[in-house]
Image: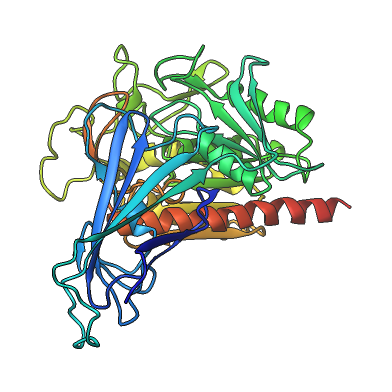
Length: 454
């Protein structure tokens, strides 16, 4: 006879970036075992469910056995996490809001003893009149590692949060910036600190004390942040890396090209290779084709500035003229404007990493990454160039092991509907893999620069 049904998760308590191994023990051989994972994210309940076939030993290893039914169909224990969907509708996103609070996921299991579907078992194993067996376990995912210190920065006009790893330092240091949703990306910065990287999560709009829109954001603000990092944070290698996603990826490459002597390396997630207008995060008084960035009080040239080849735009919820229309491709047909708006990344001598999805439906980040890296190569760039390009991922490449099922989105500033693209599994795998590889890239960049300085 089998013992009491058990669900085991290893590690049960650990960082969000850690994979969990989930197994079911002591089920009836050949029985169907249904697992349900529930997570309260803010006020929103997210859940996933999958049914498995217990093996001849009454065991299910979720990394070895694909579900026979449910919200995902691949052998992956983390599927219970990335396949979660909203079960309530009270608002709020999937990104953690309070980095000090652990994310708690309750996994419950129900095994049906009368559903032996393998070879006929030994006499007495099945009791078809027996009730279902139940078990549960609570998995705790943390953003803050032991010893990481969090400190809000309100100096030199900056709005930021610093995460310093445990230990003496100096540490590789990275400035983390959000995209067109604005705000301060504390979750990614906290996870970087857990992996030995000092991270300054920098807000530049839609954060306390800052403008509500991305329009006319001065590059001098980021110049102050770069100077602050060098003067106050003792970065390994003498300077910080910069990193951002989407509009923050565009900004990352723009800063590297504008302030190359102040930046150690650049990590651009789903970036642009050109400067664009303010688009979906624009101040309504200026509109989507108004400028995003300024320097010395003057707007930077951008691809939507009187573009002769663009007579439509997707930031007001109007459909594209045809299913093949792509405003980002159409805009490049104004060759003179495209040349003027291209980010001259070849000015930057340091290491560059681009992370993109081939199925990015928000904008063509894979194309942009290839343009960036090709420009560096053509100009004899000698430092490391890394392109992580994921075939089944879209625009929503984020930190590891969060739900990745919300492909169709509503923009948090404009309220416009759009698609990130990719598949839930593809986005989840890209998020987990890119986080690990970017951490390695950051350590490598800082270590190599520090070695060269000695």
